[in-house]
Length: 353
Image (tube, rainbow, N blue to C red; front, side, top):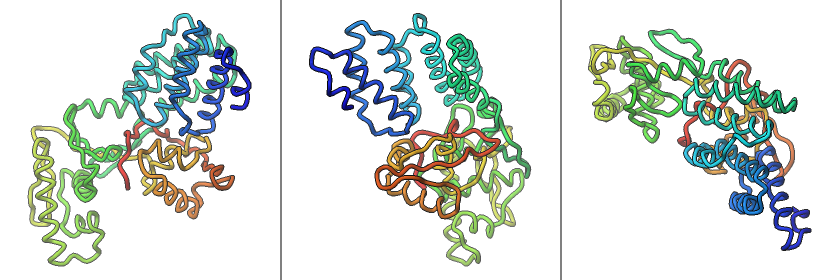
């Protein structure tokens, strides 16, 4: 920043390059609050003066930031304006990594693999060890379990391409990543209805069997001992869930409780997070191995910074995360969760809670 101020008004290109360098440092350090408009202005200056290589680099930095905070549509728009053909190998690899990142978050694994093959070829031509390692890490994400499938009383890990196939199938899926019930193109969001989602998931895990009223009350309301008020509330919430799912499934009463009855023929499955944890979304971002500020996590998660700080404090007390630095310089990190990918399936923005 001081270097940029050292250049006069006639040295616009040099100042713009300093802004791009500052943005890259901020991105690597997960300081997502840096002014994006400054990077846009620097990119425009570089393009105006014919420095297309650094202008493209600025564009790729913007795409990477947008990916981190889950703005896929904006990232795609920026990427569409960048021509990868004239780029040198290192920049071409960065471009293809961005293409793959968007495709993976869109659950389009075949385009993601194609982009990563291009990225690997370009990275090897560039001969940059760090870039080659980044491509290898992206490939690993495709071949590492990204979720769990719960069905028929059993569960197993799912690769990203298996998640893609599941969501394209005729199954009714209770999606614990997006807090929704979905069947192919139809999705009913329950992100703001945690009680209804808890009921839907409990019923789905028991399908084709039923679930007792006592268990439903315990899962949805946290009540250990069901009384008449709990049972009355359960009837109300089941009615609300039945109304929400009317296009996908019905809920039938049984002698013991309730059962989920999908419309038409088809199975019922639960798409669950790799690890069930109250603050799983926070851990998922920290699992990339980088150090994060609480403000950056709040921006990426689409929630309040104080909520993120409370989550980090609780995770720290449990020994699941650690921090260094003080005040605004404090950063949080955790080792990657072995055997699982990180943020690929996280929705944007994430619901609170």
